[in-house]
Length: 124
Image (cartoon, rainbow, N blue to C red; front, top):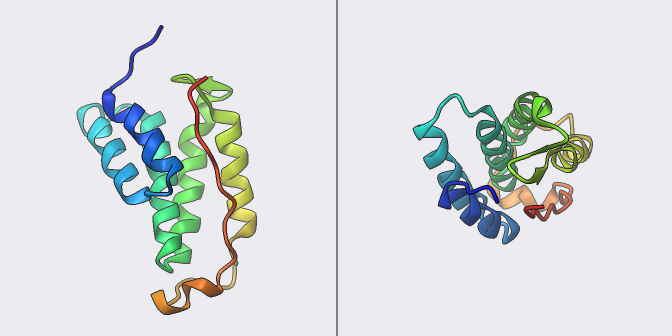
């Protein structure tokens, strides 16, 4: 059985709860100890994108999702017991759901944005 940093396991719990801010912090703790780990960087970018979207930074969300796709693609189909192909399909679904003609909304208007699909991450 593979063992990963404790923050990786904790990330799954908070991500699945929709706490993208904490998820970002957990992944960043891993990435800061090994900046060559582009898999973690890709998950980090995806998580940041979801956080940005929740607060109206639509352009930032789009850009971060594209970067996440770039970093995660070399790790498909599976890496660190995560189905990377499923994550990439989710990123693509989000990119297709995010309005292309909006860059930013005030927080009070975020409810006007399409709700992004939910992804539940699990170790396999």
